[in-house]
Length: 219
Image (tube, rainbow, N blue to C red; front, side):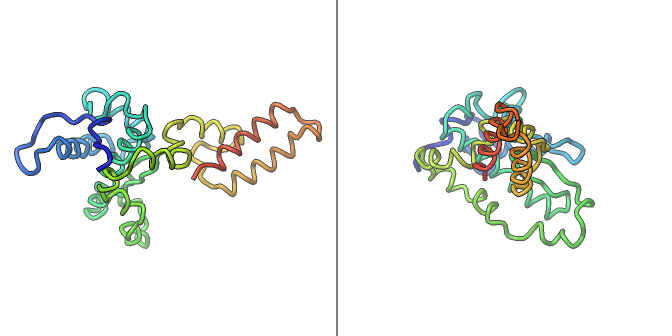
């Protein structure tokens, strides 16, 4: 194991009445309880960044205040949260409680009645991303060097969630836009409209260029 999550995640010396009483097992069970209370079908979507902050504050105190301050602790916090979220998604789908949408920019529970019948069998199909997060070995076997290698890609949205929204706003797109083709189309349209050679404003053109460069780098 390259590093223990205890360096970035609270590991209280509490145990439970039965089963694995280790601090790590206690933390996983506590996360499940907290997420079950926080994520409801009638609740609005919540960003991963905001959810981690909530779980760091009263009454939970499940993550350290500086959990996102370093690359390795950022990864450990993110992975553990998504590990439990994917467990809950499987359980809730099996029980027909609802379909848990897991996205760093919007985590929410979709009532099962809102999932079209033809798709209800598909949402519980094998998911390679879920397989990754459900394998807890990735939490313990990912080194700081590994995390730094992926930091510029996957975790950039988590570290600076507002930067993506600002870039989309610059292109006149909604904050939940995920369509890269639409982003590129909008960028080309605005770049042509505001190009200095066509009488456009240079600062506006630069902002459009910067926004697209950033969005293009995201996964």
